[in-house]
Length: 302
Image (cartoon, rainbow, N blue to C red; front, side, top):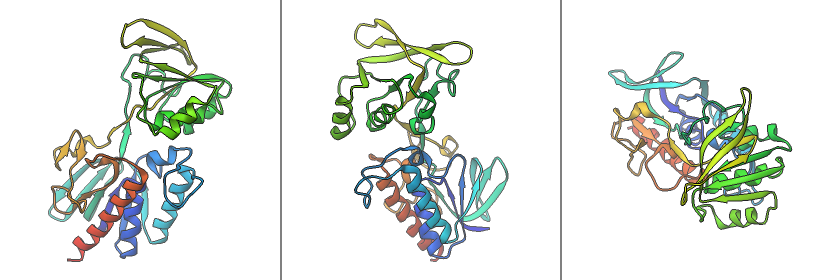
C-alpha cells in the first residue's frame, strides 16, 4: 500500500509529489498521457516566475519530474478509470490493475474542449490537432487555421506563424480574451489573418487528409470556404474526470475543495485545473499542488 497516490503528472501533481516525497511518504504518480500534461505541450511560458525570458513547457515539466523523482516519487503510465473508498483506504483502478493508498490527490487537470462539428473527429491526426507544439512541424509551408480567442489560441497562432505559410485565426467574437501583449504581437504579424465573428461549421477533405474548412458568419449565417491543411482547436478546457462525479462534490465536472484542497471525501484531495476555481495557470496549479502535498502530509501524520 502506498501512503499517497497522485492521479496526474501535470504541474499540480508533480508539485504535490515533491512535497509528499520530501515528507518521506511513499508516493505513486499515475499518468495516462504525458508527463507535464497540457503544460508540456506549450511552446513558451512567459509568466512563470524565475524565467525572465520564458521557458519551454516541456523543459519546465521535465525539471518538475526530475525533482519529484529525486525525492522518491514513483511513476506508472496508466489510465485511471475509477476511484473507490474501501475499508483498507482508497482504491485506484486503472486499465492495468488496482492500487491501494491511505490518501489520494486528484490532479488530472482538464482536457481540450472539442468543436463538435462534422469532420473534426474524422480528420484528427490527419490535419486536425489540439496541440500546435506537438503537431505544428508537420505543416511546414502549409496554410493552417487556429480556432479560439483566448491565450492558448493566440499563442498557438504565433507559434505556427514561424512554420506555416499562412495562419488563419478563427474567433466567434470581435474581442479577444487573451492578454493584450500577446494580442498586440499577433496583430503585428503579417502571416496571421483574423477571421472574426466566424465559427467552423464542418471540416472537409479527401480520404487521407483535411483540405478545407466551412465557416459561417455568426451574424448573417453566410458560409465561407477556407482552404487550410491544418486545424488547431484551442477553445478552452473541460474537466478530465467524469467518473468522479458520484464520489466527490463537483460543479460542472470540476471538483469542489476547501482551502486545503480537501474534497468532500476524507482523505481525497484535489489540485490544479480539475478544481472548481476561477483561474487556471501553471503558477496557480503549483500553488494547489503545494497545498495538497502539505495537507496530505498533515492528514497522514495526525
